[in-house]
View (cartoon, rainbow, N blue to C red):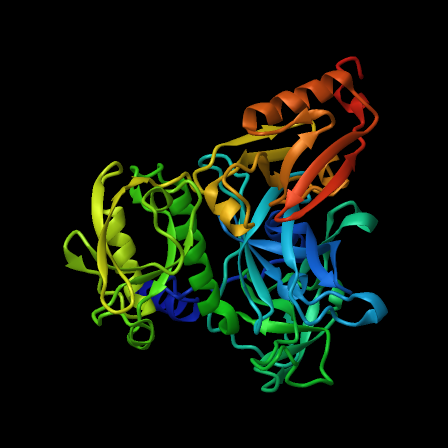
Length: 487
């Protein structure tokens, strides 16, 4: 055997004995420090307020939970426990009603602080989605990545992490957990070891840094919020497969709402200022009105074109612009509304009003521009009181059954731990007076707070209302925080 043959044999042996250069390299599991570094920027401590009715009185509490960022544009997954019915006197649930939530404040371990609002909750999954509202244009957040098709096995270890606010100063706390059992009842969840109620809302990562589930309360049944298996309570692992479709839909909803909110205010559309219901066939027969459809006026907005035209509740309109108003069922109502919005503001149109027995008369109405909505209302922020107020709009007035001449501004957002938040102010309240200063609009709101800040009283009195209810709230500012002489 010559040297050439020997070299060839050795080369072939090396090729067959060594791992193929084209073989797929097996991914390495993350070490705990690597996982810690990857995961900690994505989780937050979330503080929030709840408002509910107990013993016939409106109650407000504050709570805290974990959440984690699921998209770079600021969507956050939270445990649905923040929306459980609250306990009133005697330890009983307050009529089973779900609380109204607000004042969400997210704090991350690196010092980032953001505010958020609710997008949606799923009561069966016991999960919710928040949208961060304080991101700068183009700002992106560290977010988790999910994995479908995770092959869960009994005994498998998973990573989790939480932030303990008081004991650990919002430092991430690593929590190794393991799957104890795969439970078909209730509703396909994992029984976990090492997962207490302290980490509800925390994600469950596999060894390669992908979220494969979330620590959640026991999922609920569709019937009255009862648990499917009463004996199984507390924290369980909810596989990503269980909530993936819901999360995709919720994230799509959040982005649609954000896109709508960021669009410029639309061109003025026509408005007549009525609330109505369809003239259904049975109702037409009862009222003695001709068949073919129409609208029955149920409410007239004060100061609206409808009021100026002389319309009144219970009027029946059957024609507009010479055409029958073919509103026979609730689904037809949008067609009529779209027809009215299609006119230019200032256009005078003719309706036919019909009375029992077929008597008809023509009603001329000059349409106005649609009033500014809550979405497009002007807003002003006061940094000292950590309070944002918005213009008082017609939709807010109608929702609280207040007249169009009601003065004031609406609390749009408030920092829970700020001066205004500590006084009891919350989103939706109408501010009408601050100390001796009347608040009728955003300009007088700013002027009132400027005067208060100049006077620096020990206490600041807010006179507010919600619907027909009024109250006084007292803020106690720490003016030394604003001192420019402070070191």
